[in-house]
Image 1 (tube, rainbow, N blue to C red):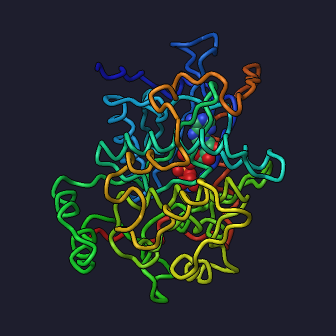
Image 2: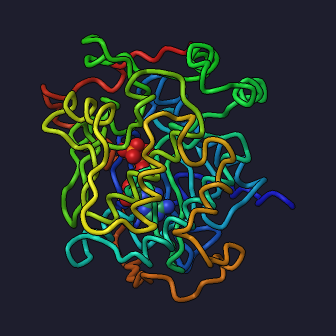
Length: 388
Ligand SMILES: Nc1ncnc2c1ncn2[C@@H]1O[C@H](COP(=O)(O)OP(=O)(O)OP(=O)(O)O)[C@@H](O)[C@H]1O
C-alpha cells in the first residue's frame, strides 16, 4: 500500500480555530490550512510542543516517527501523520481531527457515568484491533487510558498520543518468546534494557517507575476539569500503571492488556479498581489487591479479571497476543472483520465547527500559557530519563 503523502505545512498558512486540548506534552489546536483548504471544510488537529528541553524534543520526534510509520501501515482505529513543521520555538504535527472528544468525556456524559455492556464491547473490540496493529508493528503503546481514546466523526475510535510508546526489537521479542514464567530474573534483565524509566521524586523514596503520562511530572499546564475532563497531573493519573511498571521491572506488550483491563473496569463501574488515597496507596493496591466486582459474575467481569492478572506471564494476551483476547467469551459472536463497517456506533458526535472566528495566534497562545510562571510549577525537564 502507498504511503499517505505528507502535506507541506507552514505556520503562516495555518489558522487555528480553537484549542482542542492541553496535555502534559503539548497543546492541540483545531487548525485548517488556508492554502490547501481555503473553505476550511477539512480542519485537522495540530499538536504543538514547545522545544523546552531535549527530552520533550525527543518525545515529540518519536511521536512524529510513530505516526509516520502509521502512514506506511495505516489502520482505521489509529491516526496518521498529515504533515509536520518545525520553528525555532516548537515542533508541530497534524493528525486527523476527532470531533467526538475522548472516552472519558463520553463516559461522564452517560447515566451514572458508566457505559452499557454493548458499548463497552464495541469500544474494547476496536481498541483491541488498534493494539493488535501496533503490536504487530513491534510497538508497545504504554499509555492506554480513556483520555487517549478519541471518537472519530463516524463514532469509531482512534488511539492518540504515542510519545510514551516504544518499539520492541526483534532480539528482545525473541528473548521473550523463549522465556518461561520460571525465569523472572532473566525476564527482568532482558527487558530492563529496552525501556525508559523516570527517576522522579517518588523514585527517590525507593520506587522506580516506568515513564507514563499518568505519573510523569512533566505536566506544567493547568488543565481544565470541565465536562468530566481529568487532570493529567499526578493525581488520578497513575491508576493505569501495571504491577510490573510500578515495580520498575521490564515490561512489554502485556502492559497494554493490563491497561485494557483497567479501562474496561472504569467503563463498567465509573471508577478505576485500584485508586487509593494517595499515590503510594494506589501503587500498593496495584501490587497487592484483587479488583472488586459487584453483582453476578459475567463474561465481562471474567475478561477484566483475566486482563488484571498481576503476573504478566499469566495475563490474558501474554501468550498469543490480541487473538487470545479476541477469543474471550465476552466477544462471542462478534464479527471482527466487520467492525470498521459498523454504521450505528454507540455514539455519533455532532459537529458544530465554527470557522467564523478570528482565529487563535498559536505563538501568542503558547506565550500566554507560559506567563505568569507559577512558583509551584515544576520545570518540565526536572525528570531524569535513563535509558538502560
Ligand atoms: N486528533 C484529535 N482530535 C480532537 N482532539 C484531540 C486530538 N488529539 C488530541 N486531542 C485533544 O487534546 C488532548 C491532548 O492531546 P494529547 O493526549 O495528544 O497530548 P499530550 O500532551 O501528549 O497529553 P498527555 O497529557 O496525555 O500526555 C486530548 O486528550 C484530546 O482531548
